[in-house]
Image 1 (tube, rainbow, N blue to C red):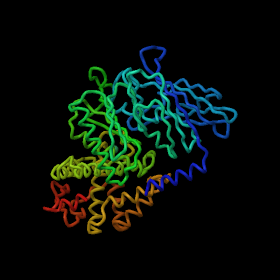
Image 2 (tube, rainbow, N blue to C red):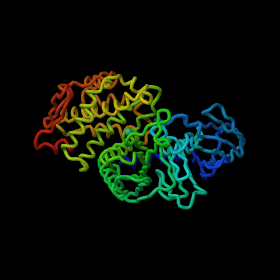
Image 3 (cartoon, helix red, strand yellow):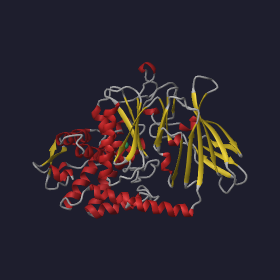
Image 4 (cartoon, helix red, strand yellow):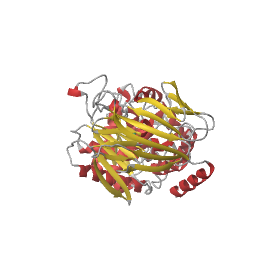
Length: 492
Ligand SMILES: [Zn+2]
């Protein structure tokens, strides 16, 4: 049903707006200084009705900053480039004909250090390239309906190629009514590619590096995760899905430069794709959780559009925490973990850890403001959000005699934003009112002011429990148990 609505919406929009072609040709080239690789991109676009076409350069994606410095050597054929400041440029042109804008993309950190801080920067190395769509494609500001062609030329013969739209294709065409197509990942190089199908739709897994397990093991986990999650969301009509995985690499000799760090594994859910970075000794269990978490962003933060984080306001607690809760549940329901493992993870890694965290009650706005600069807050939105999701799930199940769950609320949010060009951050009233309809207005108010905004931890005795669940207090933290023989009630 949702995909029919989306198709109708697309058809209407296409009738109103003229097609706006964007053609990108991408070519790896050596820099004049030698040794280094750069990407030369030529974009053909149609100028706006005025003589000035505006472009913005990306500055920060997650922990990667200063991204505008990767873009160099702008030239325009059929127009003149004026650099307004470090992050904005305009192309001045006459007439309606297409204009060709050429620019180079360079890696803006030395060597091969793939760390948390460089994970969303363009990685352009002799063996492979790895870029988020925002760092590859500059887009005229006036475009609203994108008819995109991407053509790769001059790639080394042995290089594999993969992105959120396909695997191994040197030329791709697609349309998009939103800028979602930029929230993608683009890789090429010495990747090993495994291809398969999930519920009849193709997906591909691109991996490089050496790991503790073979590629097939990881591929099978990805496949099962895709299948179980799409069934959960009743969303099986996704044309293609890409998973990519590369090793973290610390600066040469392991010497840490600045605040470079890696950790065990890190991922980002992107449009029709997710991307993983991991240390070569990363065990399987955290990767299973990461795959489940990142893929969940297809819906939570993706199709359930939560907007672009502003200076301070953001629904990170919802995006990250609810994805954690869904990932835990999906692992359990899909058989990746047993009931005991599911409860142990929820009780130990989320409830006990959050209630013992000295920063666990930091107000939401402070966590948001300092999230990328203060490591003390890195876990807070994940744990707090997961506990809030558990709380809502329990509240809805208790109030409705287990005929409804958190998932019903989430499907309402999905219907509200998916394909509708609106997001929950801007329309938070909808979130608030819908929540009130499920758990009551007063409870929704307390939830949002006390538990979300003020960051207050919920007392163990204040957790609503449907008749098959019990909350005890262990060292001041809530501890969840499922009553004997009632697993199936919570599994649904
Ligand atoms: Zn996440």
